[in-house]
Image (cartoon, rainbow, N blue to C red):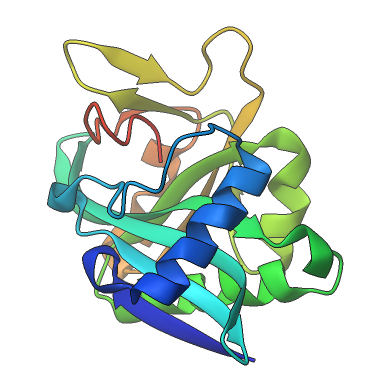
Length: 189
């Protein structure tokens, strides 16, 4: 089993169709595979855990400049983390999420930042991510915000502060409302 990394637009078709099937397992839409489903402005990169040609787990990494508390940071975040139901409970998702953390650290990003459902907090922590207590990400756009604390959501914000300047600013990220604004397509990564 090994991790394969591709720009989203360059995922080979035989792997892309498997990724879409896994996403449909987790979040059924009934839609056909769009081929590329991420905003290219977010520099989407797909990480796939592959076993003999079979995609066992997949996620996307998205990137953007983030302005917060008077400073600009390079942020990367996880999106659509999914493991094939037939392979769940074996640590494969954790392996891929830990590989994504290493990719964020190697990329030169100041921080990794994303939301997850509250019950998944420990899963992400077990792969090296850290909770940002009380923090809300504001997705969408400035004109049409999509906050992670909207009614019906039970989200927490996870991070990894990669650079010394991000680490020094940790308190500004805690208990904060962070205007991520990834756009209308990837409303909240």
